Image 1 (cartoon, helix red, strand yellow):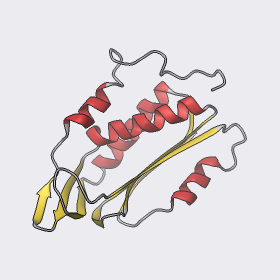
Image 2 (cartoon, helix red, strand yellow):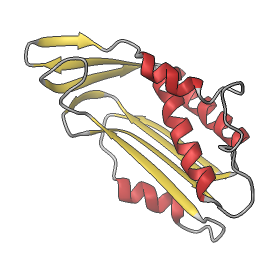
Image 3 (cartoon, one colour):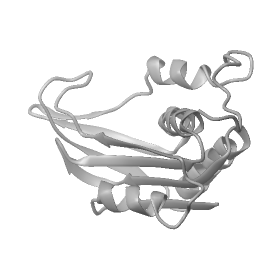
Image 4 (cartoon, helix red, strand yellow):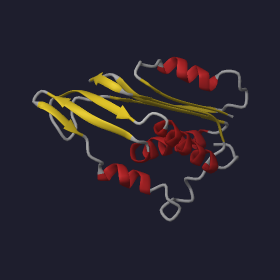
Length: 166
């Protein structure tokens, strides 16, 4: 059981992160990774980049809490969350979430959970850079809705992974 939380300005290598989740653990049956990118559209058109800010110490603590909650829900082996800050251009990587587990259902569900919670619970502030200026990114209802589906009252019992083969 290894967790890795990193908040950094430099880019990351998805292959290296995948290998760190996979290597030296013969019980691993699944690795699921997600990498989010800066895209050229959002609520604004003509997005050329993004500025991401965070509160050092508080951000890492929030990410560790998200991982701890995922570990309570699924049998996970290794978990990595990397989030970049600073000025990023379109097509650059922003975030990496990676999970290893004995079973694919746990890995898929946990990775989606990590991203859904990260979007609403991690203290990052985002400003989009456009051809006409800068715009702070507001919280989006669709992110709240995605997070809400993981609450106990809304969770489909079939989503929960067990130790059975998946």
